[in-house]
Amino acid sequence: MDNREKILIIDDELAPRESIRMILKDQYAISTAEGALEGLDIMSRNSVNLVVMDIKMPKMDGITALQEIKKRHPDTEVILLTAYASLETARDAIRFGAFDYLIKPFDKDDVLSVVGKGLAKRRANTGLKLERDILLDRASYLEEQVNNARSNIMTCYEGTVNALILTIDAKDHYTYDHSNRVARLSYSLAKAIGVPDKTVKEIENAASIHDIGKIGIEENILKKNGKLTPDEYTEIKKHPAIGARIVQSVPFLEDAIPVILYHHERFDGKGYPEGRGGEEIPLAARIVVVADAIDAMMSARPYRDALTIKKVLDELRDNTGTQFDPGIVDVILNGSVSLL
Ligand SMILES: [Fe+2]
Image 1 (cartoon, rainbow, N blue to C red):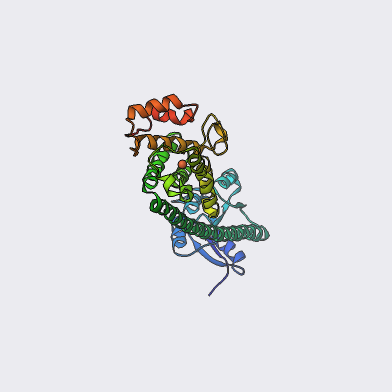
Image 2: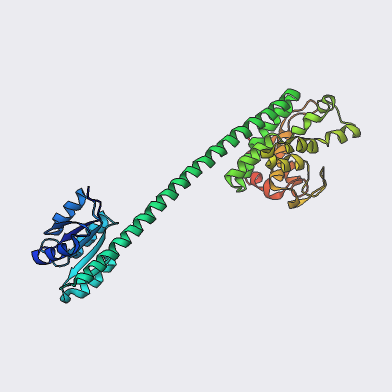
């Protein structure tokens, strides 16, 4: 098999076609065509590295053929042959993608030199293209690996969150239902205030385990029907810190810690455990504070009935800026998030 680089010479005149062929035939595999259409036909069947082509030809001229070749075979370099009279046209052709041009009558060394350079360019382009393909392959492989790893982590994450949720359920079914509702409402609130989708999901997951620390609180306090004594209340107030400690041991639950730890802080700084105020309380926790309070008010408890929606809205209005972040309460008061 002929492994030499392939050159196609297209010229309707025999003399220049043959003289170019004679110059190149020792170094390259040459084919010839008497017109552009025949040339394009050859190119559709065989790969050609470089085309040497006359500009002035009947049927299809060299400039039109050049554009056609560049459209169908963008990697093939084209060198145009021109008479001195059409030198301007040849120069213009460079912008249509011609590599260079040769002026008739041509000198043997010029032909060899220009053809050699054209082929070198083509080799360099092919090399670059190969490298780019390899890099693209590698990139898509890595992307796939990252996606797999991410989906494994998500499976792990969801499994762990579910296990924690079921642990709460086993201890206190009210907290379990409440947590699910707070998670849903936190999701709607976060979306309504324009939190990015990925973070909305994180907030929802964190909200579903915001009370996980209640696992560490005595059941008789947790389920007490009457009013709590000051000591019992002190005990209850430990659940954010207990929850944060539980979740700390799970690296990919880190994002839930601020929600667990700060969901009993108040916007005016009078909450617990740290008495943080305003934006010192992470946004996710400020969202869950509102969702948590709404769900508590809307749930019937052994010691009181559920509040009506009107009463809940009144409470939100009365406590915005003190207990709650006004920016979050707003999306409920303005109807962006419905409590129905
Ligand atoms: Fe809580």
